[in-house]
Amino acid sequence: MPVFRFAPSSNGELHLGHAYSALLNAKLAKAQSGRLLLRIEDIDTTRCTPEFEASIFRDLSWLGLKWEEPVRRQSEHFAEYDALLQRLIREELVYPAFMSRGEIRAYIADSEKRGRDWPRDPDGAPLYPALDKALSPSERRRRIDDGAPFAWRLDTDAAIARLAEPLSWTEFADETLSAANEIEARPQDWGDVIVARKEIPTSYHLSVVADDALQGVTHVVRGRDLYAATGIQRLLQHLLGLPAPVYFHHRLIPGPDGRKLSKSLGDTGLATLRENGTTPAEVRRLVGF
Ligand code: GLU
Image (cartoon, rainbow, N blue to C red):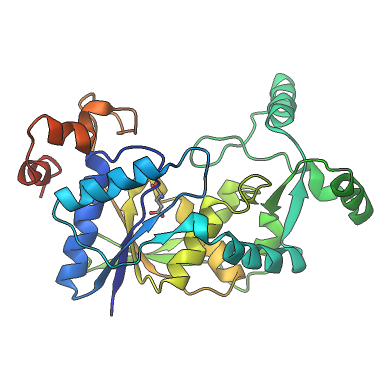
């Protein structure tokens, strides 16, 4: 049976873009006689709050959505993500990366001063200068024992080198999910992504692939802004022996100024719309249903 999911982060209020994503997942789950799961992505325990989580439930219920209980809350599953991380550590597919944000910035600025354009990931963030990869095991151990802060980063080149053939994913052509294309995964575009941090013992990429597999998600329907991320997530799925769902990355709902909606655009927030007298039927029309 097809399993769909809507997986918002509880670090802000839902807006029209979330409404579209949730309604589309519900519509497709219904059309395919599938299941719809709701997952709260709250690994960032400093920015995610119980209040935002409650507002997600309130907004989705107001829209008339129903989902299965219990809802999976990622912050309750750090031990499961850690078990996957330990596998990657054992297989030497991740390494401790010690450079702080400031050191990374300074290193890149220095390199760019000398005329080298630093490569950026599909989201525009500079790739990690993978200097730590060259550290000897004893030097790594010494720094860790000294209490130096570090993050576990994927050795993306090493991981790609272990592939028998290039990775791809199945992407539906439109929201009817009738035709699909195979898309080449380009994990190399992301460089050495963070798999786990000290203060957050997992990462978005690790927990999303873990949960999609654990919850038996077969269809990942989410915004176009996560299209390229699928490349690195496919690599993690492969390394961890997790099944690959099929994907559809839907259009994004633009804000009144034509720009991408963000959690700070209060007037497109579902709670604000509701307070201003907008009805769920109007929300459906606003997002194009
Ligand atoms: N939690 C992510 C977000 O709110 C979505 C994750 C996903 O759908 O893969 O942007």
